[in-house]
Length: 445
Image 1 (cartoon, rainbow, N blue to C red):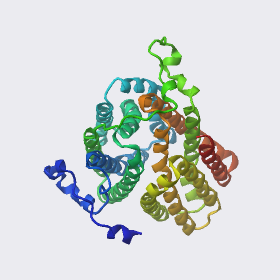
Image 2: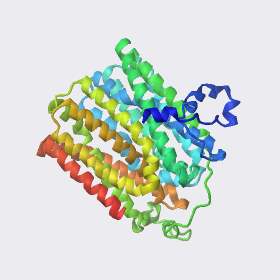
Image 3: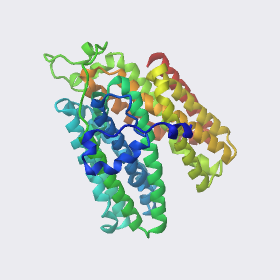
Image 4: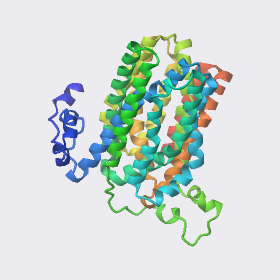
């Protein structure tokens, strides 16, 4: 597979706006390696697609550095489980309350500008991480990070709601699978490379200066990601008729009741089934996350080297799976790929409950990465297919609420189920949940 990829002809030169811009000179390498193959795409879309790819690449830098090591840093400062949980849950709590107001704010503004300025406001918080280790004692730093997480979550809410709308406005339906697959590949490469580089830095630079370097790299990646969001332009074709389009929008003459302000009318449309299906998917996916490391260390007795190797196999599989996603989505449709993929994710937890050796863990990591590449590429496109083009912000706001409610409820339910049934039995339960979630997506989603 790798040989075939490398043997493919080089992709065409980037658009003229890049050729004449020295800033983009160094960006020719990934395009010449055929990572961004634009040969079968009309030139008018090249600029948007390239910026989407570099947006996710720089987001991979953020994720592989600052975000990836924040919990490690606060743990070294002496944070307890409650503080780490609060740090992780803060954005979900804020989003639950602000998703609907954020959607109304987005509907009154051009999506591209709203997403860009939301990203700037959110990512400016990363700059404050850099000097913090030198400005406060350990416990003060922990609570400052929690406070920053709260305030950063406010602009993160319209960014999360608006990005999917921007993607839909900027990428025609027929190219969404290809763009999503390439973004998966780009993110996996950037995340893996920068996480290894961050680990290397932390091993060789004294505490806390190594973390300041990591936070600075994350802040730079955040700025570059926002730059590429700024360069994306809406190019939406006239939206096709949609079964939800007439019923989804509130009439202008309707009184502004609580129901209309909260857009509860969306729950009376067929989109309700999509929301429930994706909630079940996210809940079943995330409920197992809190116990993975406990199971891997305490039951499988894996060391850091085993877990690191498993992560490498996982992201290798993400790369390979992403190359196959476009064909799968075009042949079977995004909904079916999502449903089958979610059901396939059940095998991971079933098999993990029966695993006994590091080799089993490596094989499961590879399988999990391959299946996740298909699901991660398909479910957002499946979501957009179910949303009327003339009412995206409100529908995406309700999806954002469903997602964040799944994050919060699963983070509580996962450990409770594990404590009640035992780790292996909990994994089996989560596997059944995933199987049912995948079937529900295919049947009713």
